[in-house]
Amino acid sequence: MALYFSSYICLFIYFLISALLSLVFFGLSYVVATQKGDVEKLSAYECGFDPFDDARNTFDVRFYLVAILFIIFDLEISFFFPWSVVISCLPLFAFWSMMLFLAVLTVGFVYEWKKGALEWE
Image 1: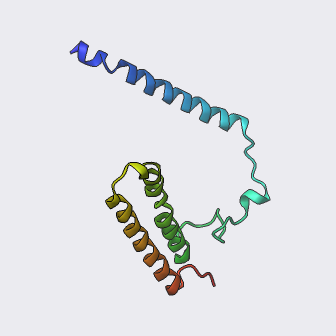
Image 2: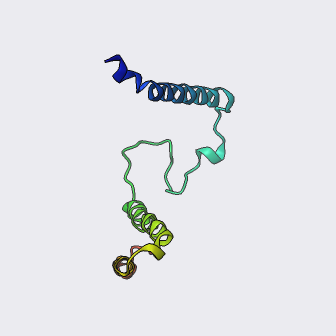
């Protein structure tokens, strides 16, 4: 049993050092950083409401819509990069499957454009 756990000692030491470094960095940032907020930090940021207010206030659904659309169309990069790196080694099917993926994304983008999801009143 000791032989079984001895193979994980390096992993345990790694996690221990990581946890200690995280605590040290967090503690140093708390001690070294200034803790007083200025006008910029206390102002409304991007979403238009007071950041230090009641958490149960109504929130415009357009912010969620923009965030979801950004995530959907930003995640396509995670498919494009590996595909473009190995495109020369892939069969013709891989090229056309990516073209189909691009067509579906384009149809979705045109649909949300026509619905006015990208417009901000």
